Image (tube, rainbow, N blue to C red):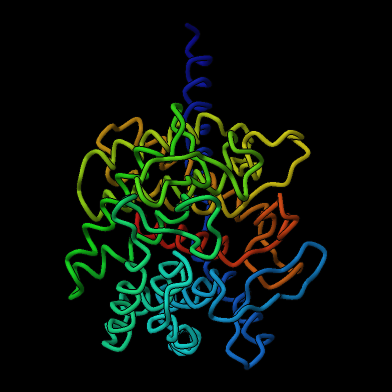
Length: 392
């Protein structure tokens, strides 16, 4: 080989690798966290002083819709504030996080209305206690865990999700996996040990009944109240009973990863890998942000769901830490980071509104919150950024 030609090849190879390395390291997590803090500061200025918190900014609007503490999403905003306190150590965020968390206190002493108590109280007071060890927060978390446990049906083996909506039997939705974290935590921090058993039983029952043979998740499973037998799988927020609703699969990946963390039972880790595998294999979008349902009929002319991507990116970062297979670990980390970079580069709200992200889809079949900003997308995006920062 000609010596000059060989040297040229080597030089190009080195420069190419340097370019890749620089590109790979160019994502500035600190800058994204500062962006979130700036957006949250704008939001704080427009929240009415009436105990409500921001939930969603409709498509075409720049103004938040606010909800009371009873709304299922009420824990995400205080959770975001706790994350900002964690990221910045600025007491401003601690003060605001405490204020908005405390609005949710009545949930700990009210009758359980649905399964969302984990989203509401653990994302708020749970993050608050993790960062401050405030004993008042702990008491509220423990009381709320006992309240959530009242929805457990031992004949079925799951917590009922929507007691107000019978749907022809005892209903359990895949979102419920996320709320088990409250029970696990309480059982290990002074609460009743039976809470741990309830959480494990719920996860086992869900694993056995909530998934199709290809490991895609139904949104809702209906069980017989008395016999506990599975009656049918159906959807509420997905395209159809047989489709893979993006956020539902995201809840499942995150939920079973968390369940493995809390139990160290290998069957849950194995199942989390299977759930992640089908999601990643079916994900065809170049930027790794899914359409709201993987089987929606008008793809590519269907709305995306940034919230699903935020949830999955955060879950994959955690799942990678439990993964011994080096290739699989690398895949999880690479794709999680690409999701976070995509959200940061192309889905941030900036001057459109004061949320963090655009293009989430809440409940398309009901015509609700389509292609808009939603607080839970922001919450898991911020969590993913913090998890990525810790990995670095």
